[in-house]
Image (tube, rainbow, N blue to C red; front, side, top):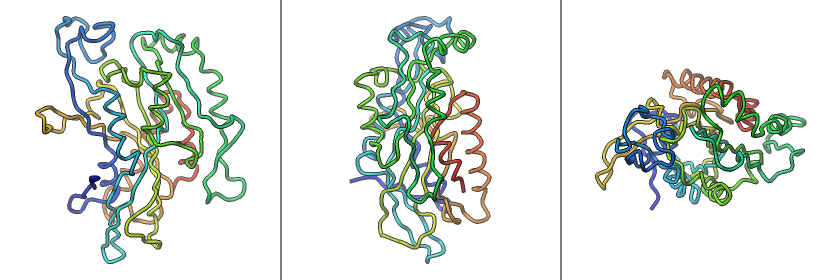
Length: 316
């Protein structure tokens, strides 16, 4: 039976969604000599520590596995409608891999991994509610990707920062043409096994991912609920270095510990009305801050993110 996220007392629908979209992963530990490359490949530790020093991390394989259930059935999020007798519906969201960049301290042994979506580079995609010429073109990101060769990433930028872009992926296709996150990662991992083998302790602070959340249905059906079809774009740090965004959340049933990858950035689309914002709360400010954080991160990373550009162009 699928778990449904139950809101805390007086939580806004925005707060409930952000908690539901936060991965909780096993927080593991291993000695440094278990990492290929030794201390030079581990980011969170003092380089002077010995090979038997403990290194804490989460595995990328666990991260992708976290999305398996929601990829198959949808993430069930309770949404309260205060203007309709304080009723609650359960909205189901499917996660899609929107973008990811993995930076490591050691140079990848293979060529830089920059897979592209299957769609034509000359195509564009638009939402079915877009009017006339309001279409989102791929040309800007394609132009940027044309410059994404090994020399560019292994050159000036990498030499200054002492890390290397090991893998990146950016989604171009229409939401209707995408496959859920777990399926996409499984597809990519066949050619790029680093997606399954890397651990957060091996990833630099510049490593991140973005997940696009699109609604598929809600129970019970409520056709007049303004804003129920809102879409979300969450941003997560996937490096152990950012302890501000990776918190231990207590013991698991097996006696281990978990860590939470709370979204540090957010973009929204179709967020109409006040359904997701609690009146008189700090939700509007939080939405603004999270959107600003996502925009600032992309600018700092020098990354053009097509989904973010699309969400922002229709930002409400």
